[in-house]
Length: 388
Image 1 (cartoon, rainbow, N blue to C red):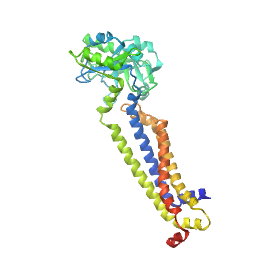
Image 2: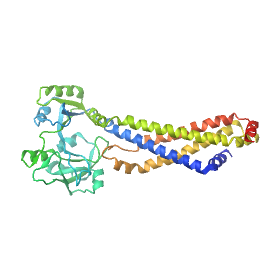
Image 3: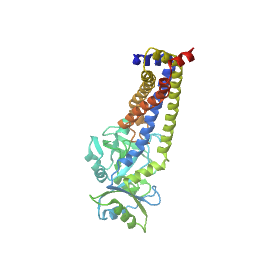
Image 4: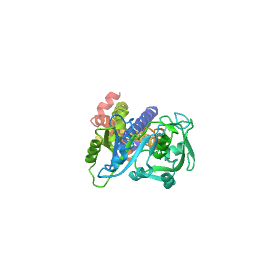
């Protein structure tokens, strides 16, 4: 009987119920998306390992390191391998078609990052062919790139002197086992860029933007970082050596305190919807005073009428929250594609969805408990008197 009363009372005001459910669904959807954005920003930091260090100019990330630094870094005791990495900064077709391109030492770089899995094409071709490249799954799907295609990239930092675009042959498509990079980037051999600059076929700054260090097992990264910084203390270019986690955190800070900003917005959305649902349930409790008095006169216990009011709040929020969670989960792949460049780790994780479900239930319990507590204390005679 109480279960039927819960449904009947909710559908008594169909429009109000529908609007409240819709508001809850939208709010929960936004909270899920905002939380996923925060998680994606932290993904690179969380998945970083302590055996990878990044060496960059102490002046600026945009100042290249001399080529001679590679050999000196290889000679440092405890360094297992060294790989150069250079931001290319070109574009495909037009400047709005943005995705990252990096020149790397293919064998060393992939050796440092076993998270990269070549799911289509040939790893060997990428390691041996001068103009070969590997492309992330998201960019390959976005532009329809396939293994064997030629990808023309128009240089901005590095320009070919004959005015032609750089051409890269797709040797493979990669996916990531964990978010240490992203699946939107193109990687090509650094030697192709270096040879073009030295041979006079292209213009641009010499050296490499950063140098990645992979440490031998059991080596203390703090000691190696301090030794590397000391090695180049007198130049020609002073360096700053950081762990991979610190380096990735720098990029998050470069775009401002987005996690705090997003969390603040989420908190505002949560407070607004909580107040709205509480208001709805208080209105419902006031309208149903007479009905609750009738139930008590018929012999229903105080806790039975308490359950009817509480159940309305819980059911309202569970339905609205469920719709929001479902919408967030269904739209997650499309949102990930849309935000892939800025938020490569965007994912609607099970933890986010579980927290959203718990939150919806909590709002339902809180919003339903207030009118339910008042109804439980209500005397039948008072309900009839006020309802008259």
